[in-house]
Amino acid sequence: MKIVMNKEMKEELDDLLDIFDGCFVNNEEVKCFKLIKKISDEGIDLESISKEAKGAVYKQLRESFNWLKEFNVKSNYSEKFLSYFN
Image 1 (cartoon, rainbow, N blue to C red):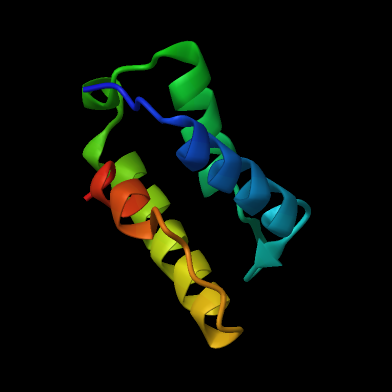
Image 2: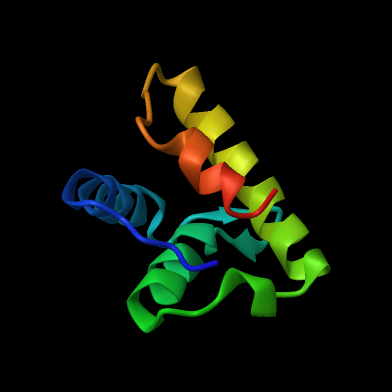
């Protein structure tokens, strides 16, 4: 399965990349959105990503979206992004 995004989804991903650029949690860079962009841009098949790697991305995505919710920021595609790695 590959990640295919419409224009609005790409725009939201770009916004998320800007928001989390240079952010770290527990001395670990928040790179889940960079990875989604890379997977989408390069047409990487999600099936080629290990279960462990998907789990790490899912965890970071969930934490990132929860952090945004604390500031009343809503993502229109959070469930879609999470579904790729669940």
